[in-house]
Every structure is written in C-alpha cells, then in structure tokens.
Amino acid sequence: MVTITYDGTFEGWLTVVFEVYEYKFADVEICKKELFQPNVFNKHRESQFDQQKFTRVWKGLAAKLSTSALSALYKTFLSEEKGIENVLLSYVQYTLNSKQSIERDYSNATVLKVAQTAKRVYRESHRMEAFVRFQLTADNLYYAICQPDFNVLPLIQKHFKERYADQRWLIYDSSRNYGIYYNLSVVENVVMSFDEQTNKGKNIEIITDEKEELYQRLWQQYFASVNIAARKNMKLHIQHMPKRYWKFLPEKHAF
Image (cartoon, rainbow, N blue to C red; front, side, top):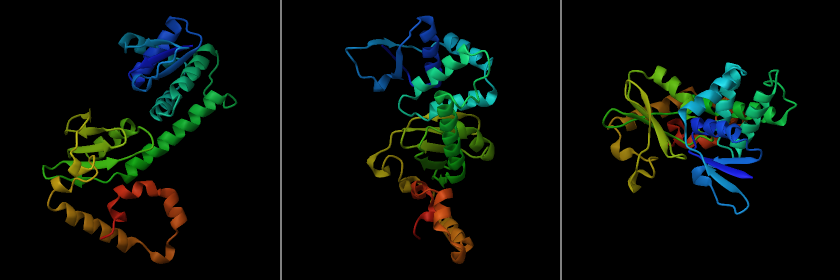
C-alpha cells in the first residue's frame, strides 16, 4: 500500500491521479497532507501540484465524460467526505478503462456513489444561494457568514457575482476558515483572522453600518407580516429551510 498526500485542491488531486498511472501504483490511498498519519505498513509519497499532469488528466476525462459528468466529479470532490479521493480515483479508473460511457452505470457502486454525492452537494449550494444573508459594514462591504455541510463556495461564487455585480461582498465559511471576496472586478479566495470580539467572524456588530440594525428589523417585520399563521406548516418549513441555517437568517431572530 502506498499513501499519497497532496495539497487538498482539485488540481492537486488530479496530479495524484496522473502519478498513480505514471508509477503504476496498484494499491494506493490518497489523503490531504494535513490529515496524513504515518503508518509503518504503508509507503508514503508526497505529491506536488503539476500543471502539465493536471491538464493531461483533465483532457483525458473530458474526452470520455460529458460536461455534466465532469461537473459531478468536481462536486463530489467538494463534498470533502472521508476517503472521497479514493472513491473518485476508482471512478476515473473505471472511466478510462471502459470503451463505453459509464456515466449511468448505477449498478456500479462507485458511479452510484458519485451521482448521489454530487446531487447532495448541488442541493447544498442551491440552498446557500437562497439562504445567504448579507450585513452591511461601515466601509460599505456586504458581509455574510455561513457554515455549509460541504465546500460549496466555489459553486456559488458565479451566482453572487452576477446578482450583486455592483457591490463589494464577502461570503465567509466559518467551518473551513476561508471566504470568497468580490472587489467589483473579480472573485478571490481570502483567509481572515478574527479577534475574540467577533467570535470567529460570527458577530460583527462592532463593524456594521449604523443603519444595519434598522434594515434587519425591517426585514424581520416584513417576514412576520407575510407569514400567515393559519397556514403554518412547520414540518414542510423545516424541510425547505433546515434549522441549521436559522442562526444566520435575520428573519429567524427575535426582535
């Protein structure tokens, strides 16, 4: 068994895939560098991102998979589930070894796993697009905090860039300690350090615009006015808006 560590990026993982073929590794385990734990029974190889290797694997997959299948592959990687790199390696190997399309071969456990996981990640990204709530800071930056189940910020940045093209905004994933920042031109990944007063960025009242509290209260009042108590169906409501999102929604906060 050979354990191959990589930098945690999708491009870095595809570099590892190339090296599995390059060195003819038959039995491998792939894991992120920061999660690696030495094992006396396993050999260890540290992979470094290589643009040429990444490109060759991606082109090879693009020649055999549809755009939707490539997208599913990427979404599955973003799930960050334990051992997902090895599941995806099996998917790639099955793809490259087959003469026919394997995309809908759900009798294969790996293909089914990728399809199911990609669907869950897509659903989470769709929810983030609906449930992200911005707060205005004193320097005219619209800031939002979130804690998605999966690493969906790369999937939602296009939506927010197009929808809020005339505003500077930052969406920060406090679970993964990074965010996406739009500076009216491009979207960039950012890492921020918060002091104890902001509780890891969750409480930013000290830097919000003086009118932000008013905006929040107006939104809460609007939400209360359109909510018809007689038609309240909490089970259905939770189904569409799970409770784990409520702490970031101003309409769910008490006045």
